[in-house]
Length: 137
Length: 137
DNA sequence: ATATCAAACTTGCATTTTGCAAGCACTCAT
DNA sequence: ATGAGTGCTTGCAAAATGCAAGTTTGATAT
Image (tube, rainbow over all chains, first blue to last red):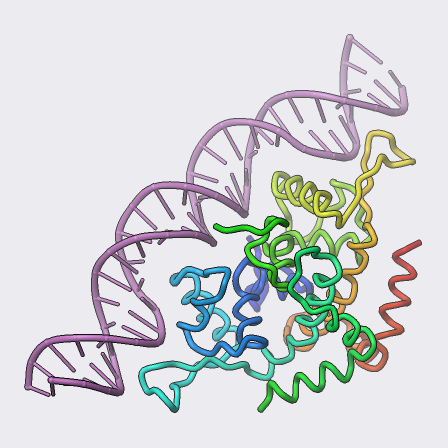
């Protein structure tokens, strides 16, 4: 298939995110890093959707290649790696919150607290900046 | 794999959207219906990313099953079908705009006009409601 | 120094999904 | 009745996924 200079099928912004996040697993890693305090390979493996090890390795590599996350040696444990967001990755936060809101509204089995929707609809801007602040620490 | 009563791997809101949109094509159909005035099977087939006919048929069926889009006979042409958003589908608009903004910022080859980012950052709320109004006609 | 262990992958292989080409069915106009 | 337009369906090769098992590397205990 034809590809542009970024390796994408087109220059469309919707397609651009699909090239990185258009699968069943990548966004779950972003979720775990953003909202669930997961940081290591082992942490991600434990998530309830049970990603398999080869897929996890592949997706972490791709997220790093795309400049969404960075990998560094853990200060506590020299034999473990810590994954963290780059600025580009952190900026996915508004997308993640809009997705959460949509699902909270439309999924009858959601685990999202009902207070989330109220807070988000009444004060999006502040919620985003507060969370961004916490994540940047 | 274990599935909940909605057929999902978990009750997480991020995972909920992945169950429907976690592939390379589904969101392009949403894009075409939302921003590119595409309405018919033939319209979607013509998009620049060149979706194949069997995948298109499958994704349209799934979007309809998930209550995101609806299918009706064209008033102009009785042998053609028109796809349109349900309310649930229309409510994907904020997600689509956040995705567009993120890509516009991070994709060096984006076709998004630079004016989009200025408008979106300075006045998200109005932009969403204006577009929603146009799409609801 | 050597054995053990834990963390982070890697590999092999069966199953599933995708992508491409071709074909089919059902209108509608002539 | 026939041909064109629209919306799919089918068959099959290629790629991605899922599962289990194995490998590597550095820390820790003996």
